[in-house]
Image (tube, rainbow, N blue to C red):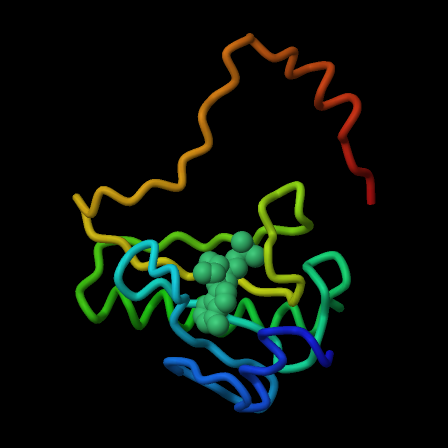
Length: 134
Ligand code: AMP
C-alpha cells in the first residue's frame, strides 16, 4: 500500500535493520527498541491487521516469530515476549500486520504487563458471553 511505512520498508524505500527475510516475511529491528533486539515480523504483502490476515500467511509470520525466538534464546537471552496488537484500540499504530518479538534478559526492567482489573471480574458471566463453539 502506497503510504504504508512497512510497505516502504519492504520495497527498500525506507531503510531498516534487517534480521531475517524469506519469500513472504521480513523481520527487522523496531526503532522504539523496547528492549535490545526488539524485532518486528511482518508479511511482505500488505495486510492491515491480524483479523485480515489469512491462515496461511499468519502461519508463515508466526513460524518466523518462533524461529527468531529460538535464535534469540540461543544467543543468550533469558526469555521472549511475542505480542501483536490488533486494531488501534489495542495499541496498533502501524496498520500493516506485525508481530513484536521482544527478547528479554532476567532483569532488563522492560515491562509489557497489563495491570489487573481493580474490581473482581465475574469470570462465569464473561466465559458465557465469550465462549466459542466449533
Ligand atoms: P504497534 O504499536 O503494535 O502498531 O507497533 C508499531 C511499531 O512499529 C512501534 O513499536 C514502532 O516503534 C515501530 N516502527 C514504526 N516505524 C518504524 C520504522 N520505520 N522502523 C522500525 N520500526 C518502526
